[in-house]
Amino acid sequence: MEPISQRDDEIDLFELFESIWEGKWKIALITAITSLVGLGYVLIAPPSLSGNMNIGEGRAEVFYQYVSLNQQLAENDAELIFDAKNVFNEFVSEFRDYDEIINAVASHSSQYQNFAGSEQEQRELLIQLAKQFELAEPGKNDSQWQIRFKWYDEAEAKLILADALNAIVGNVKKSIVSRTEQFAKGLEASNSPSRKNA
Image (cartoon, rainbow, N blue to C red; front, top):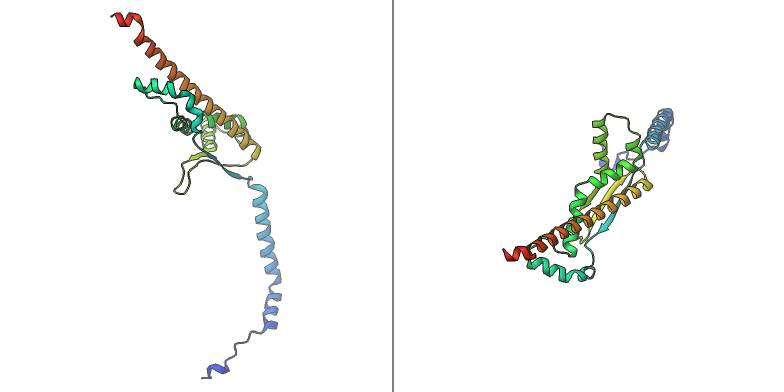
C-alpha cells in the first residue's frame, strides 16, 4: 500500500482532450439535436404574455354626493348603500360570473374565432380562454386586488380587458340603478295617499 502523499492525483489534460476529441461527433450531434428541439419549440409554441393590474375600491369622496340617499336607504332598511365598498363588491361579483369576459373573448380572440370544433368544444375553449383572466384577492402583504391574465397576444389582451371591464362597470351601474328604482317605487307606493287612507 502506497502512502497517501505519493498517490497520483494529477489529471492528464492531454488525455482528457483526447477523449473529448474522439467523441466530437457524438457531442456535435447531441448539441445540434438539442438546439433544433429548442428552436422548434420556440417557433411552434404560441407566445404568451402575462400581466397584473391592480384595482381597488373607489375614493370615498366620490360617494359624498350620495349621503342623503344613503340616509334614506338606511332609514327604510334597504340593503343598498352607495359607498366604495358596496360598489366594489358589486364589481367583484360581476367579474366573477365571467359572462362579460366570455363575450369579450368571443369577440376578440383569434384563437377562439379560428377554432373549428363542435359547439360543445367551442364552448369549452371559450370558458378555458376566459379563465385566463382572474380576479385575485389581496394577499397577506397586499392591499390591492389584482386582475391577472395570461394571453398570447398583447393587442387582443388589451381589447378583451377593455371590453370586459366596460361591460362589467356598465352592468354594475344598471344593477344599482335598477335596485334604486325598485326602492323608489316601493317608497312611493308606501307613501301614496291611497295607501295612507286605508
